[in-house]
Image 1 (spheres, rainbow, N blue to C red):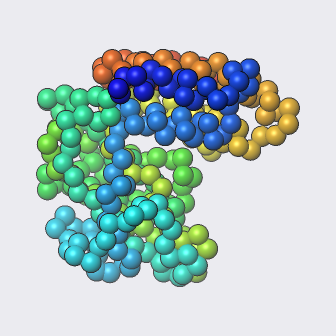
Image 2 (cartoon, rainbow, N blue to C red; image 1 turned 180 degrees about the vertical axis):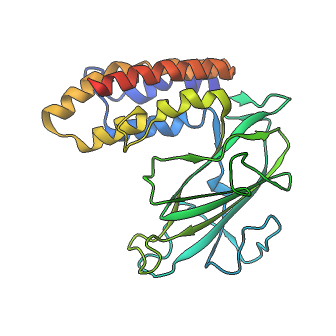
Length: 274
């Protein structure tokens, strides 16, 4: 059944749209939502939350008794409140597979992808030890990034069965006078990294840079008139050919997906440059 769904995706995405027409930003969003499931898993669905900076919850064994699992992990908090902050935490055992692909028995370099509206510090532990080879004691800090900037703590050597704990301190920005939008979790996933990253990053791209699928979606959302029509025409064929990415994932060999993403990113970014 899963194979039928993947192979049939082209019909699902494009079936209700005349192939002579190009895609909209909403169509690309639906496409991205399915593509990210091929080589990563969502961590936000099980995240716990507690408002307030103190007591700190960055430690591995921090007291989670006053935290609650959010029904909507992406809801906003602290809108318009100076000093608004809160903690997110999630602990899990690394599964045998991420999406369509098994984690090799010898392990693989994985990465925790994150994005938070406002500013955030993210702490990661693997089997009780601080993780992220190039981190500062297991911590990364970011602020005021576009929602399409998915920051990763890779390389993170990981095996199936390892226990991972992620703690995120999120803050409204600016903190002193508060933000009308407050802070919110935008993105939290565990994905394959290592050599796969070289194809995956340009494939999704970034809205600010105007490249990859995320850049294409942003341009489709903001362009109008003849410019929009011209872009839709240029993107029509590269988007249709993304069926090849789903078919590569169906082989359950990560190298095949890496190659398919690399080819697709070249075609998408070439269309965006014209």
